Image 1 (spheres, rainbow, N blue to C red):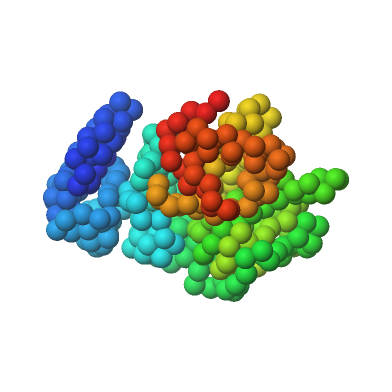
Image 2 (cartoon, rainbow, N blue to C red):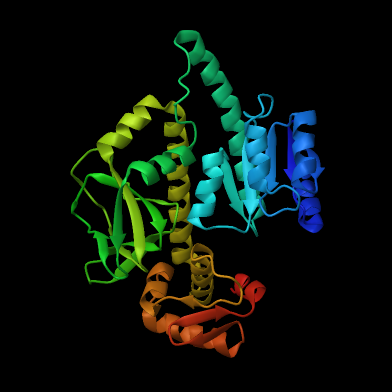
Length: 350
């Protein structure tokens, strides 16, 4: 049975997360602060550590830094659990060596997916390192995680600033670069023969952008535009291919990431095909709130056209539905701003 160390100062969250993990047949060790967590990690040598950032005595960064410098614990997979979602905060954690980053509140399936993938990857890495070291040793500079790849983009990529409303690339134009979004929000979309826009995906800070093919000059299959001021880091496809050729584990992680993106797009298409207009509208509002990382008391500022495009409905139908939600007290609407008033009720709209 795999052992997981959970370091979390919030008692209710700690107990709930412990129960979720135990129901999935993991042995769980808990710690209520960073100092106790460090001691528990060294004493028990768990297979995985899940750690909050904002804690008394020693914060999550301190825990990771301490364990990363210890020969016994430095290889243990480490997942941050925190409300912090700024790119610089994610970057700080990944620079210290974290393997993944879950934001509160999280869904049960997101937690279990992160745990299972990190444990599986750790086991695969051990096997690959054993095989590689037998053949010709392991390079200390080898990239091992997708986050190290993102840091490479940040450190070595061409920094590009795009104003709100400006296009980043256009459908049918030739693609020679892959981008990492550092700040802002981007919409990717196609135009149908009648000129109607259909948003296919949204990219936020720490997301990749522009994957069409690893071959140069292959046309983009969609267009992309900045929904707010955006900062990107771009590297050439040639540079990325060199990195992937030299780092098999990064290639595997990137395949996982792209597969997850395809699954998300399929889920969106199913929603557009089979959900009612009310449910499409509600789910799209929630999707934007999640991607834009808005707090419950903060409004979402987004155009009606963009909302309708993601939902896959006519703008007129969306406006009527928003009006209905407002009368029911689910949302407040002022100009382009939409504020969620009843989160649970909106989640269960049919």
